[in-house]
Length: 423
Image (tube, rainbow, N blue to C red):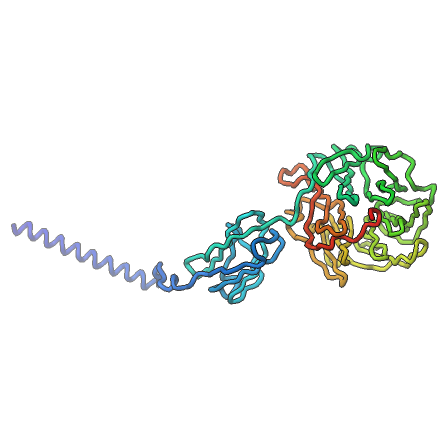
């Protein structure tokens, strides 16, 4: 019995000493490395954010609108919090004690859960249901290897497109508001038209970077070497684009030494202006032209005194000064005087106000990942939607959106400035 008791005592003593040494070692490690407990008893005392309302209420444009979130228990800075639309983190623009302003992410969904995370709180905010809608709508998509080049509209809302199929001309197609596509005019010798506009006669007038403007009645093939007005009338330079004024006169330009006025009786008059003009627009008794002049992408304007008198051109907007990348491919105006510039650069459309301040229209929405570029656009008076031709940069890239006519909600109910050819 003594032997067994002695063994038990020795064993117990050894065990006790071992435990004591282990405690000392662990204690020494804690003191040496100053390790804090994993659980912070003050963490759960931080109140979670609370969302009470969001403006605009119910819905906004994805990737476009700024949203104001009102509530309580918000963080003191944008670096201390995050706002999530489902699992997408939004860009925080400003933070106040009870208000957060964010840019809506480019996430188009009918039902989105908005939550706020405050980094020192162990709970997210309440979930607020919201809807983000698209500011752009595909009006008509073209098939693979179909490439649209110019776009115009009539006063009934029908679209007219010149495009190619596998690089071959396909004539002019008419697209009704319901999307129905019919032939307007069969293909002639042209591959595509660089510009088309309706005239007051109800015919389409068209240019193709040659010395002439063609007149195309519905159902007729454009004559190959017989433009409606051309060199025999004194139009001796190539025409890329043109527009009508309220008297039915045509104002035209191209890569030339002049801009031209053409009357309906085919009288042609040249006005000196050396530039590579790509787009022409008549607005508020001024002729506006856009393109490359003196090595710079810019917009110029001339006051129209009458059909025989045009004042000297003056610079209107220096595009390269603010947007060094890209060339101007088209211009138009809103009814209240904003200039819209279509480009082949990173930003597809730039809006220029009368005071010459500017902004990119729907940055990151119109030109996702720089996979698309602008080709042509049209904007009717009283229509909130501006219509543009979206051209793919690389058709062999499977992620590139298809060539299409896109309806862009400009948020301007006055719509575009008048196109006098369809009045």
